[in-house]
Image (cartoon, rainbow, N blue to C red; front, side, top):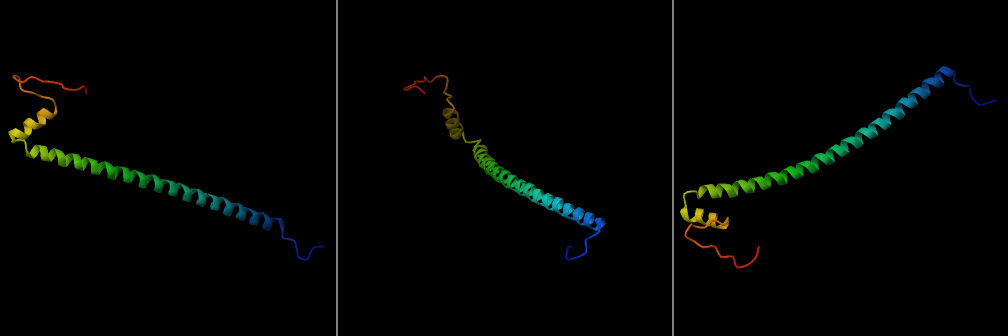
Length: 99
């Protein structure tokens, strides 16, 4: 004979049900924490990428603002055109080396 009274079957079922619910709840909490950690990592990576993109766009905007600010400067516009390969109609283009 055992040392103590045996629990009725209803009580044993209730304990097993509570234990199963606790295990499932714990697994759900672990899974949700992993999902949130992954989401946080992805968001941080995306924020860093967007910040780099914004910095590049701001640098490009500043460069374009400088060009626009010198729009009335004839010498500056001529230099820009020559950098793009434009020449005057009476000039002769001489290529000294291959690109």
